[in-house]
Image 1 (spheres, chains in turn orange, blue):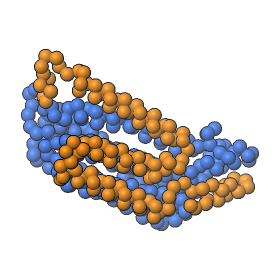
Image 2 (cartoon, helix red, strand yellow):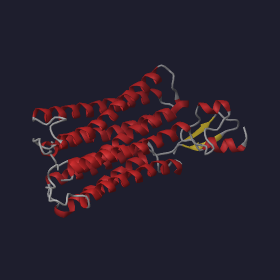
Image 3 (cartoon, chains in turn brown, red):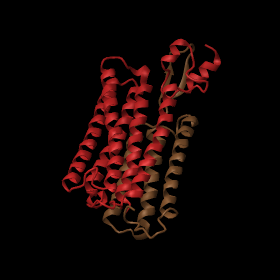
Image 4 (cartoon, chains in turn yellow, cyan):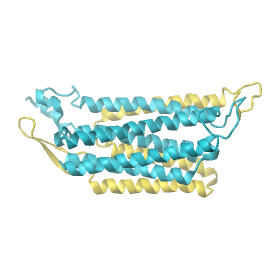
Length: 117
Length: 214
């Protein structure tokens, strides 16, 4: 890891350069490319009942890798993580609220679920 | 400068900000105001896209009582969109390389990566325009049915985010070229990078949930 010398303050304060080396980031990008290729593969190959779970898992893994390494959350202050995760949790709540409408809020009068009623 | 300030400054990711010129720590947490603001914005932006994605999922199979036509899902060109997704994913790599370059003081290399990132973003937008044009020719416009409205609103909002990111990248490149931003302001590049990575992770979700999950 690189060490940056901070010359703007009295005395010398050294702190670590957060993140990976360039080669490390390239390896992460290659991993993301492979995961994307597997995602696309599910379109051409029938994964059966595993298709949706595998796509969701791949999506979460890619999401996690990008925010951890490319966005430096893994190396940065936890406060940044808390800020972002708060928004993310609220977003999941919004999504869950919508999901309830698919189950609990369907028209009891026999409205066709495939059409706007 | 007292010891407390030194400790706070040492927690900055890429060196001091302009606040240090006044011997004022950025926040009592020792973190940068600008970076904190960007993270708060990104957290709030998650809500916007959650609402848009939810709306699309709710309406994607519905064409409305008095309208007809295909849904967007029936017209998807997955191989083409996969290439676009790959391009956007690789732009995240070039963005992070720009951040690390300026962190090392390599200004010219940083400028090159910034331009590469903006170019890849422009390729993604061009692909989206091509996709939208194809849908329109197939008879699927924004007002064709409620499903298409939800689809174009979601992907259109993402496209606007990418376009704004391209403008920010080009502006940043211009500021660096004119010497207004140097290695001592590397955090500016990092903050723009956070925004760029965010549009990438939003697309990761859209690509999986909207395009690939049947």
